[in-house]
Amino acid sequence: MSATFSVPRTLHLARWNTVLLTRNKLAVTYALVMPLAPLLLLLMGERGAETTGASAIGSVLLLAVLFPVFYNILSQFVSRRDELVLKRMRTGEARDGELLAGIALPGIGIALLVSAIAVPIAIAAGQMVPVNALLFALAAVLAVVMFAAFAYWTAAWTRSAEAAQLTSIPVIVLASLGPFVGGFPGLSDTVREAISLTPGAAMTELIRVGWFGLENADATTSTLAFVDTWSAAGQPVVVMLFWTALALDLARRSMRWEPRT
Image 1 (tube, helix red, strand yellow):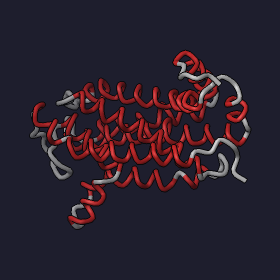
Image 2 (tube, one colour):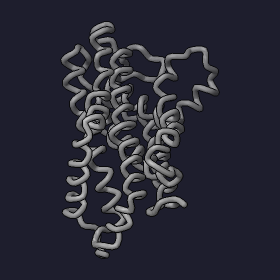
Image 3 (cartoon, rainbow, N blue to C red):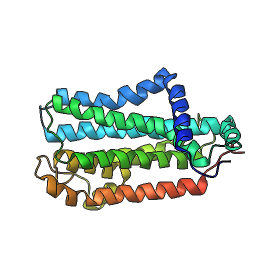
């Protein structure tokens, strides 16, 4: 096995995995078309409304990290593990990190592409130019890394590609709770605070702050200037970094390269 991480070898593995992904038309649809579908909300709601835009863009990024990143990585890793592809490749020159990155990069690239495409589409549909585009980019980058780590952790206790439909549910629920915290005013402060600490809530809040200048989950009008968004982004960034570190550590501790017996 090679002693050093090889970028060219990793990119070669990523290109090979991209070819395999594009051969599955259903997977391509889930990866590219479905995440952009929430942008249709911008055509049905009040033109330029910050809350409509925040909901639509938040849903775009949520679907982008759940399908091309989380579920795609999970199913691909489990399938190749069960087919002993990974076991054979580990006996060659490829390092473990190269194999993991090679599987993850196609989905990560698609999710980041979708996030980038969403910007001009949303602006053309009447939404404001991002108040702090750097924070929106940070939200996308942290989200793809976090959910890639979640995918590898989930793979550790997923027995087969078919079982991934069930084992993925806890992470999907954890991610999906957050975007709706502002839509249920009847929730107690304790429950709302707990939900705000979930990965999906932190990701959504960072989008609301970075793109729309919305001060909190209840805000409906942009009030934050570029400078103000940095301090307002503190909590969601810390929450996302915490979940990313936790997921990476859990994935590292529980990684399985051979089929479960």
